[in-house]
Image (cartoon, rainbow, N blue to C red; front, top):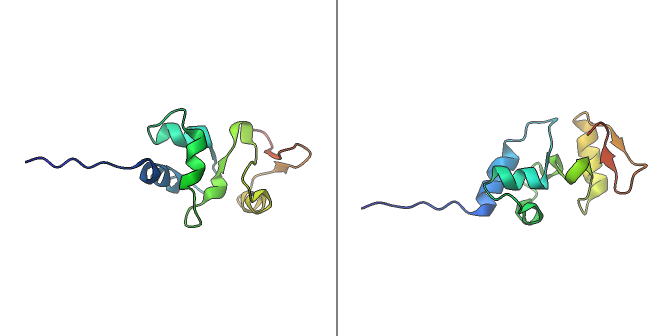
Length: 95
């Protein structure tokens, strides 16, 4: 008898986000691709919650697009990122 174990999209996203080291960031699309679902970047946000370092996930081109952008910027700055707030939305400098 074989047992098939299915890992949900949510669980895969959580695993990828937990693997992002302090000071590093990935885009929503990169997280989706690493979770085995390329093209599902928009769905990644639904898996991000308070127990994860959600601020390490940014929009394409380093854009800060989280609903709580001010909090995300503060976290990223603490981890050494420079944020250019002259852009709307703000973005990580040197992306």
